[in-house]
Image 1 (cartoon, helix red, strand yellow):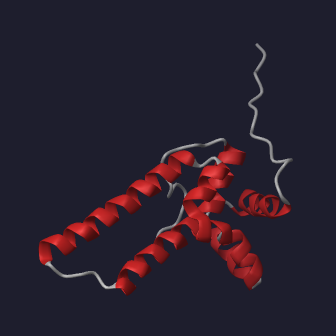
Image 2 (cartoon, helix red, strand yellow; image 1 turned 30 degrees about the vertical axis):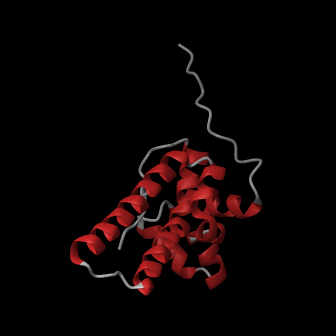
Length: 143
């Protein structure tokens, strides 16, 4: 019986920064693995940022994820952001306490940081592993 070869998504048309990130993930595993953490610590600061975060995702998170084709994960993240906004509004209405602008900005920066840190590995899972799940935190280490 002949086995049908499984095709993986192509990496040939990716920019060098993505190829470098994907090679790092192939060699050391995902953000949860101990070898990943040790290898990341051994890198210089600039390389650590390149592997661990996406600057474009920090500034343009939802738009960038749609461009990368991470639409399922993006819909979940937008749902979480919307839910947090609703909770903030309910808190203000029910208690009469206005949420300080600094706290609101901090929450927004937290979501931007989440987009930045999650993007690289989520895109790796899509491009290399062919996984397109709904969980934006798939394979990520959380505090």
